[in-house]
Length: 374
DNA sequence: CCGAATGAAAT
DNA sequence: ATTTCATTCGG
Image 1 (cartoon, rainbow, N blue to C red):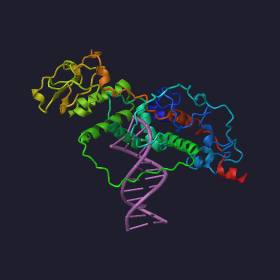
Image 2: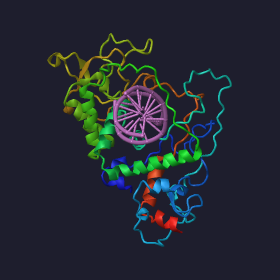
Image 3: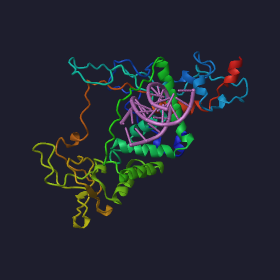
Image 4: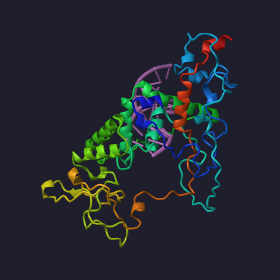
């Protein structure tokens, strides 16, 4: 178990990220960002006893206090043997079987600011954490679907982390950076200078209420809530206060309430009103019907009511599955991915990196001073 | 040369 | 929308 799990077992990811090594939905013909080499990709980076870094990678060792990086470490302590068997979890990392995918011959010329050869920056620790928070599936769409709010939640969790809790991600970032450097030794981050400041648009969607909610969600996650329990807690959270319609997660959003709301599907009759009832700030005039949780519900079409008031919890009807008109669920899950657009190549799995850290953090490394003396 | 400002990383 | 880092730029 990851030591991170001591406090936040819920963040101990078990589900593969779409970018995980092993992801095989598409192949990517552009120069690979990260190595897909057959060999375990990380073992040789930083540990003593490897051909490349006989004394360990100083870049790496210098940044972290591994047992062996202590200058006072006893001389002659065994050097890590990279030829020894590595953990299965790491050895299992292999190049996915190449799935042939042929791009359509006539690809519409996309105006892409970044060419296909663009090399992305390595992610920093927070970005890795945030990515993992998303790919872990711990924050379901029902809890929060807005990436900006997920960012706020992620930041709140991040700030609540101790250094020890952040460490796996910092290590992972270091590893990613090293691998990036190894693959692109000449890469140079060249941010473009913008002549004018980007217009900071006033975003009403992200009011104080929404930020507060994001923080509360963070607290719930830090408290160990996840899955259905988290969803329920968040539902209670939302039930305690009238929230902006935009922040009702789409799958919890009410079915369209106003008959005047145009159906996004031409000719498609709207389902009857279910779920939370929109009103315009006059709760006492609203007749609250029974709440029927929808397993799949379309998000609120535009325009949406301003405020929603959830009914009391005791009016919930459990285990109800809404029958939706054909096509509904798809409408709001976003457009299907265009297969002609190459996916970002897989990045090293954070899980593997953290496992690697778990493996090496207690492994003695020859102190650099000793290595230099040899 | 040093602090401020800013882009870019994933979603 | 977030944090961190690499980079540039102004003084």
